[in-house]
Amino acid sequence: MTITYIYHSCYLIEFEGFSMLFDYYKDVPREDGSEWVRDWLLNKEEELYVLCSHSHHDHFNPEILSWKERKKNIRYIFSKELLESGVSKAEDALYLEKEEVYRDQRLMIKAFGSTDVGGSFLVEHNKRQFFHAGDLNNWHWSEEVSTEEALSYENHYLCELELLAEQVNRIYLAMFPVDPRLGKEFMRGPEQFVSRIRTDLFLPMHFGENYDKVNRFGEIAARYNCQYLPLFHPGQSFKFGM
Image 1 (cartoon, rainbow, N blue to C red):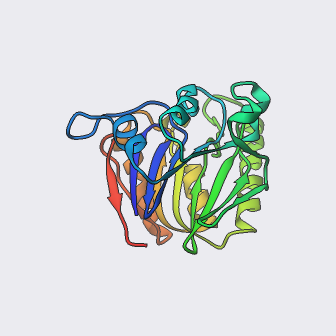
Image 2: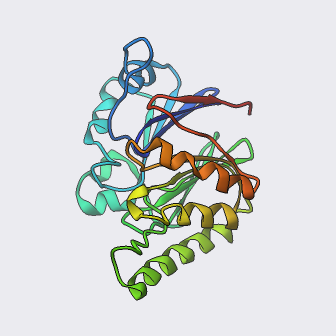
């Protein structure tokens, strides 16, 4: 298995025989100057699953719907919010509402909630579980809003986190927002996540160019026996046995 950070909240996971792409925003170059998605991924023979958590422009690029013209073995699995917001049509994808499940011979995908619009995805393959949070996070904005308002945001997050924790004991790999815009306590949500759900591997997202800041989360993750995978540039890949 190879997992590649594309950009922002977009990750590519390449398994033996198929690949999954989450929340594509924009492409990035490979070492040889070609592009990761347009030149590498879309030219692979294996089947491709394209998942999208919600309609915000930094998570959904409508370009992805044109990919089926050049790649026939492609499946789109979206949060129902994309259909409801009008950015895609009924025939464009399979849509999942919160707690709905998609299954086929390779994997299971279950939709969970968010603390913004849309949802998040739990994927199971080869008895391992992978979680892409979309915009699920503790968006407390504690330095910008009243204490009461910040606590209401946090409570919303903790309720969504508890729903996930009730249904999964262990996550092999989590892709989760670590967003420095939240201020001094920007790592609060990710820490609550790894402290509540046993997580083997953790990858950050939604952090812009703040690599140094988000990589500090590695020390916190280690307290919970979670391996943080530091990022230094778009297109960075990690390989693991399955």
